[in-house]
Image (cartoon, rainbow, N blue to C red; front, top):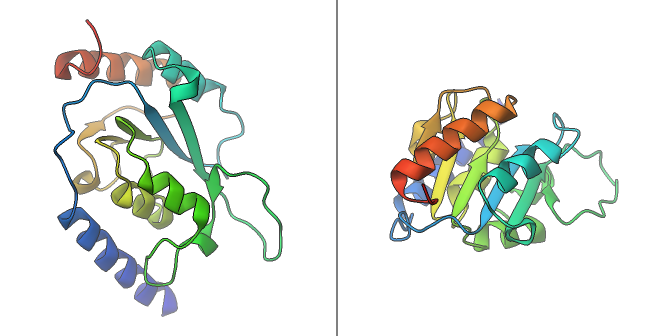
Length: 173
C-alpha cells in the first residue's frame, strides 16, 4: 500500500517538473554530456567512455551519475551516485550529490536504461539538461529523443546517436 502511495507522490512530482521544463536550449551543440545509469546493473564504465569519445566529447566534459541500492548505515564515498535515501517519500530530491547533478545543465543527458525505475526517472525529469535521450521502454514524455535499440549494445547506441545528432545538428557531419 505504501508503495502505491509513494508512486503516486512521485508521479505528481514528475508531472510538476515536466510542466516547468525550460526547452530554450534544446538546439545547442553537444559539448557536455551527462550519463545516468543504474549502478546496481553496471559494473564498468568503459562502454560509456567509448560513447562519449565517439561523440567527440572530452572526458573532462563528461559526467557519470548512478543509482545504487545502499544498505542502511553504509557509508558512501562516491560523489557521483545517489540512492533512495536522497529522494523523499514525496519525490523531492534532498541528497547533496543528486541536487548538484540536477542543478547542472549539460547539453545532453543520456539515460542508459530501457526499464522503468522511478528514482532514476525522477532525476531525469528534474535535471536541467538541455536535451534528454532515452531508450524504448521508458516514458516518452521525459525525453526529447527515444532510441529503439538495446542500451547495452554500445556500438549500436554509438551508431544511432551519431546518426541522429548529425541530423539534429548537435555534432559536425
